[in-house]
Image (cartoon, rainbow, N blue to C red):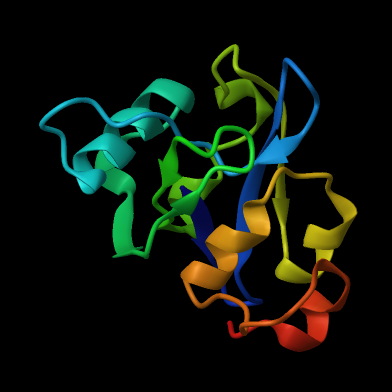
Length: 144
C-alpha cells in the first residue's frame, strides 16, 4: 500500500523499515480468500498501523499487479491510500506492528536514499513516477 499524505507543500509518502532485514517498504500483506483488494488493504492498514482509523483512509487507486521481488509466486497489487495531513500525523514509528521498527514520511525525491525490495514498481504502476524513471532521478521524474 502506498500511503500518501496530502499537504499544501506537496505529497509525502510513508515507508516502514522491516524488522527482520532492515529493508524499507510500503506496508502491506496477503489477501485472504474471498477478500477484495480494497478490503485486504483496509484490513492490513488496521493490522499494521494501530494508531489510525481505517475510515480516515481514502483508497484512490488499485493498480495493475506485479510479481514480488522476494517471492515471485506472489503478485503485489499497488494500492494508493490518501490521508489528509491531520489524519496522517498519527502515523509514525509508534503506530507500527512488530513487523516494522522505524517509519519515515518522504518525498519521491528522497526515495533513492532508502534500500527497498522492488518498491519502485508500485510507484510506477500507480503512475506516481513516469515509466522508465530510475531511483536516482525521482526529483525530475515524479508525476505528482
